[in-house]
Image: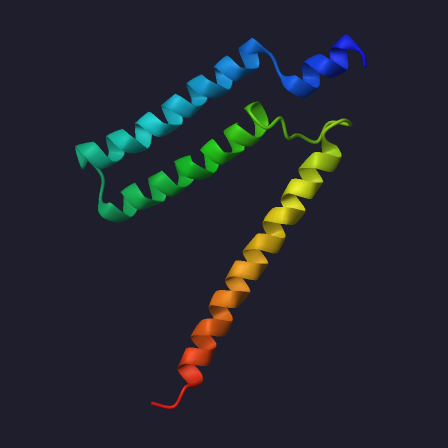
Length: 106
């Protein structure tokens, strides 16, 4: 295994530091949004959701090293497929439960 491959697959101190700094910032801003009460409840909820999505992407890139480079493409596609299966399984299960409940005789 070459040094370049080992470096790219495991990250570097700089990469982890950037990921950590972004994670702290992406946690502090929603915390401020909630604690200050500067925004409406709906805007705060949307903001928290948006920062959560960005933070998930930061974690996937900087800590799990998922990307679409030649080395990481298979892992990234496997991760996305797993996420899709989980969303479908949970979403369809909830839909079936609510539909069955609506069809129950009362």
